[in-house]
Image (cartoon, rainbow, N blue to C red; front, side, top):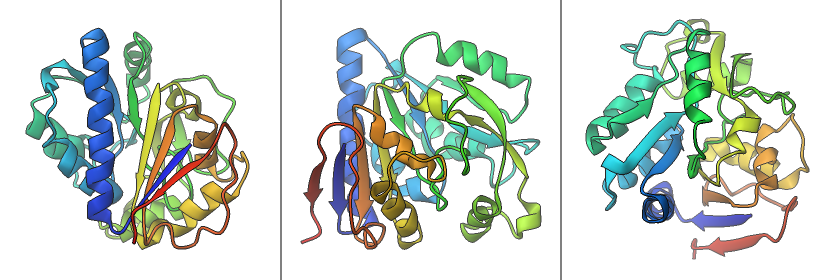
Length: 255
């Protein structure tokens, strides 16, 4: 595990995007294409801003994403399909992408596509409650399904209101189609960009705990090639680091 601490979200986004671009370009050089998984949400704004401007042959990149609300149209401001179309697809010109459409019927096609070849890079955010994708605690670490329908807990639904995607908690859908924890862990490399003060609890609990489905992001620490990008605000509550696999490297750029 590698931890990179930036002074602010802007610096974090630049560093996370630079490392992501390096991995993507190496994949293209090695086997002619790169297959990636992208997260959405407010915490990914800075990283995506720098990533779409990176020197990458986007015609050789294939994109998947993590989750979508059940029964939410793509025209809704909170739709993750809308988010990725406006902030990634339209800006890079990527033509090969696979949306989670929020329907049970779409899971079969997504499963076939994501398992047709390895995923080179997963940009996996961490929610305020420690979730990865929409796998809220207690997350299902046992299922080998690629995507599944999950129930969203009150903390997760509250986060969506706090970030401005919905007016009230009652407006937030109660279910979503989410990539499973097991499928996330199949990515060859994982980068988690987790800025902002509201993620401080999630970052501290992810680093302080052993593997537990009560803090689903602890699973990421068991990955061979996991990098966590935090900023001064999100890292502020970290008191200890429990390493679950290999050595932990820390690069601190706050000074």
